[in-house]
Amino acid sequence: MKAIFSPGSAPNRARPTGLGFVLVLAVLVPHHDATAVTTVPLGSASGFAVLAGSGITVAGAVNTTTITGDIGTYPTPSVTGLGNVVLNGANQTADTGLMLIAKNDLVTAYGNAAGQAATVSYGSANQELGGLKLAPGVYNDSTSFGLTGILTLDAGGDPNAVWIFQAGSTLTTASDSTVALINGAQACHVFWQIGSSATLGTGTDFMGNILALTSITADTGATVDGRLLAENGAVTLDNNTITKSVCNSASGVPDTGGTLWLLGSGVATLLAFRRWFLSPV
Image (cartoon, rainbow, N blue to C red):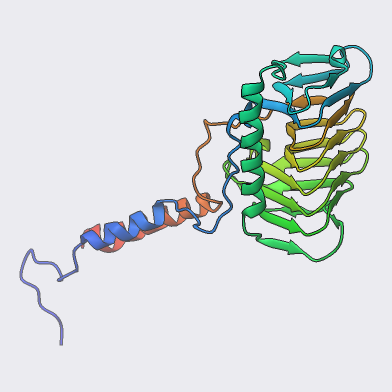
């Protein structure tokens, strides 16, 4: 039997409802992953490019090391070789009140980095990071990390992506090793929590904030976009360029990847919605 409609009438098609719009919005609106790694708050220590506990030593010739950001050491106020530094910042060592606050904030930051739950745990001693491409997360090795070659950190388009590397003991990079940041990754969001000491080999191009319980050594020609923060020991430099990393606040993608996919899905949903509910008969 044919269906008969009165003149000017249309089939009884379901009309769009508020639920339809809610579904569209659910697809379009980015979301946070509740289990995602969170950034490490450095507090007043964030103003320092180099912060030590038992002194700072700078080898080399006059003006062969460049530091952008403040420097300071507490409780041992020894800075040797300051004449070898082009300092684009201030030596805060004499301000004991500020130094005490900064060191306490470093202790808190170290605890925060160490306390975040690992998303990847390596079972091998001295886990080699060279040749890996890693998504945001917390990477833990109960012993040490080594880096020979290139470690790539891929933000997947999210400039707020965070990496935390937790080493039970040491971090050691081979000569001319590199930490490469791609797809929106920022050095300010990379943290290296080191249970004892960190050594950056000759010519290393390093990214991120090193929070070492003991000491940090940057060998000849090593460059750092980040911070060298040693809680108890010394920081030793030699013909280096250390630049305090600054986040690009203009970028504000809140979810951890997938934004373009979500946007594409939203557009497709809107088109389907229009076709099935709003198109003329």
